[in-house]
Length: 237
Image 1: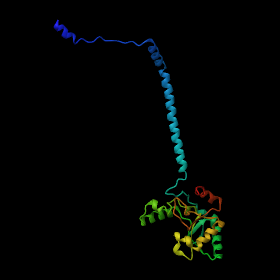
Image 2 (image 1 turned 180 degrees about the vertical axis):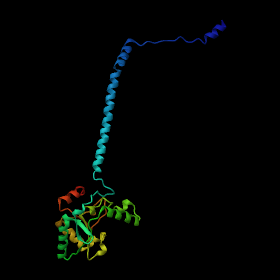
Image 3 (image 1 turned 45 degrees about the vertical axis):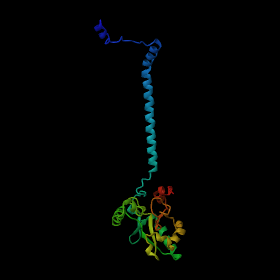
Image 4 (image 1 turned 120 degrees about the vertical axis):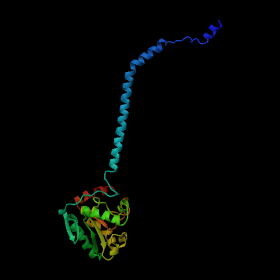
């Protein structure tokens, strides 16, 4: 008997089974039947959520594209090179767009009447020449591209390539050629007062957020073609 008692200590307990009541069973059956429909609804919701996220991303990309629509490089807008047949020579080594020739020469003559002698320093520059200026001078001055771009446009991004830009100096103060000190000359003061009458405008003033102040650099806006060329730049003012 003692031996049987010891064995009984290791008997496996009686397995108890519980049964779901009828209400829970019915609920689970209904849930099982509805599962495919619930899964479908969840799938539709998830797809719409993903689509909304994608549309939001696309809208953000479109917004960014609008911000960068002008395609600036180092602060400079792109400009196409004028066809050769639209260029005219106004003096040795200086060509300009034919549309601005008369206005430019008339402006110089009008300045002479006031005792001001304007000097034309640079007119049309090809993209190839601009390439040499930008990269050669950058190298010789040991400047990085972003630093050099403050005072010289990358090739394909210079107003001079349009033929509508002209750099002007004062014959009485040649030491101020291409210098900000040009603003202290009589020639600059005369231009500020009179240039608009001849459809010329200072391109890069002191408020320009991209390019350093260039009191010598003027552009012509006296024709429809010129206005189209500089439309983006003027829209940002």
